[in-house]
Structures are given as C-alpha cells and as structure tokens.
Length: 98
Image 1 (cartoon, one colour):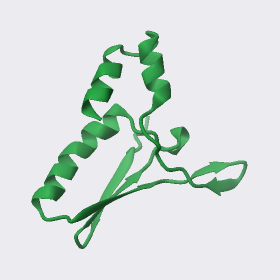
Image 2: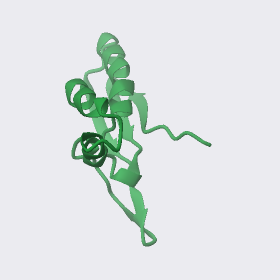
Image 3: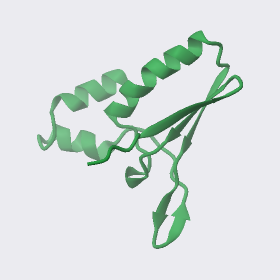
Image 4: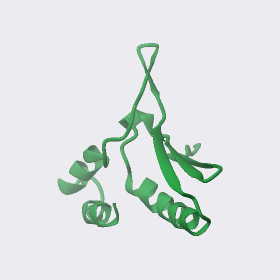
C-alpha cells in the first residue's frame, strides 16, 4: 500500500508554499493535514518566512484537468464521525486544531 502526501511543502526565497495534494476530496483539509502543517508553519515562522501561499493540486475528471482549491475541512469525514461511522473524536479534534 503506497502513501500519498496530502500536502507538499516547499520554500522559494521568503515564501512558504503548501501545495494541497488531496484532489480526490477537492483538497479538503483533513486532521492529518492540519497536524502535519502546524510544525512546518511554526518552523517557517522562526526562519523568517514572510508569507505562506497555499495552492491546491488539480484533479482529473472525464479526461480533463480541473482546478481544485480547498474551501475548508473535509466535511464528509466530519459528518461520518458525527454519525458514528468514523472515530467520534475526529469531530472535536478537527475543529479544535483547525
């Protein structure tokens, strides 16, 4: 089973770039993504990064490349946690950490 990074951090001069890489859910933020971003953002802040740009990875639909930019959290996962089909702690943890 291969693991895909859900976001790809990079630096360009004093600009931090976070490319969201979760096109299957239109780059919606997951708790895992939030937890992974936090230490990177804190490190960038310490090293003098002046701005952070967040971009979304495109997705393919019917053979065409479509843009997909995150509009917030993964509502589907939070909903499933709320009705008991996912770990219930996800709902509280997600909104507290986001």
